[in-house]
Figure 1 (cartoon, rainbow, N blue to C red):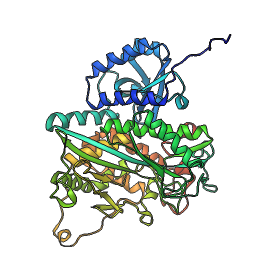
Figure 2 (figure 1 turned 30 degrees about the vertical axis):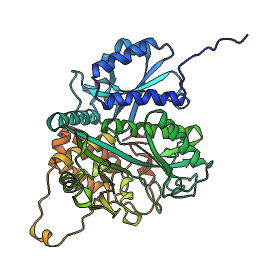
Figure 3 (figure 1 turned 180 degrees about the vertical axis):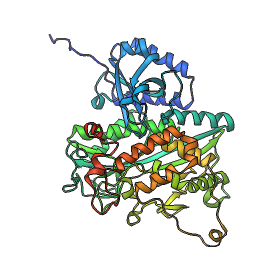
Figure 4 (figure 1 turned 90 degrees about the horizontal axis):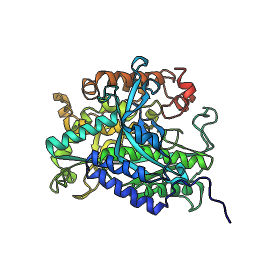
Length: 480
């Protein structure tokens, strides 16, 4: 007679996970009342005895994901009073005002694959509140949520976004933390675009991530090795910007965990190796109203409407101001190298991939714009918030008479120091982020920039990797 297992926590097969998570995602997309969702999921947690903990997530100002596991019984009694020390999270609060609140977003409730995250756990994202319950200015997820609510209420607009996030798979655990300029990174594959054997390490890694994404309700579209060796990209269906940003955070988390389990490192550094293509996070954006795509016009140039071209014009007008948000690390400016299809020219095009904004070939359903200059290590909530508010409400640059006669080629900043200076001088960035949040972001960027040479050169520097905001070298960060 076999003994009863000591542990019997929830483990759900992938096909059942997909059904559960797609149902939860649909409720979020339909904006089911938050109180109704709260009651629904609390009741589920109360009745499901095999759940042991709830993982509550939030992102800091730079976009690094933070997670706290709450015992289920504790969370059920205290979900409306979850606090954390904001002074310990870079970019939030000073020591004298350290207590902050986690406000659970019940629409983000998802069931996790137990082979990657352990059995008996579910996950939710949260908003950050001050001690008095008001919204925290540095919580870009909250800012994005409020802006989406505002444009829906005022104009009936619904934003749809998708992101093509690229990364690299390197040999060894903690390859970024252990990086040195002398040795660099070791590739797991020397293949290239769409080129890998069915069972080679890169393909198996991609398959593992793709299966987990399907189980999480990402609604996968395609996955493949990218142009550079050891590079990968997995695409999933467009969605509400909040859902999409959450999925990007989970995509990166899944990738890192899947790589770690096989003794490797998944990296989202924009340009970890010189001489080969870097990684981007192309952001596809459209606006709809009453389920009609407002960016489509069959008679418009390249099938794009006046609203679509206005959106592009406003982004290009504020391109230099936005650059630090879209390319927020020292390493990301290596990617803006024109030798490697770099999207560093402040212009739009339907065909030229060096343009900051591209108009993809599309029909009424898929008409959109693609912002190509975004790096994969950028804060996705900040990226979507700034692009949407800029495209809809941003200023339009006035051209002088000489520019109307002869078009000039303009480029994005070539190094982070120039991007910081332009961002700091931008009144528009102050107006949409608040002066306090903007100053905090500048301070964080200056800290890292000050630890790397001003000139990038051809050699990836140790400092630009080990002090990177996504590389979890907490001991080093405290020495700033």
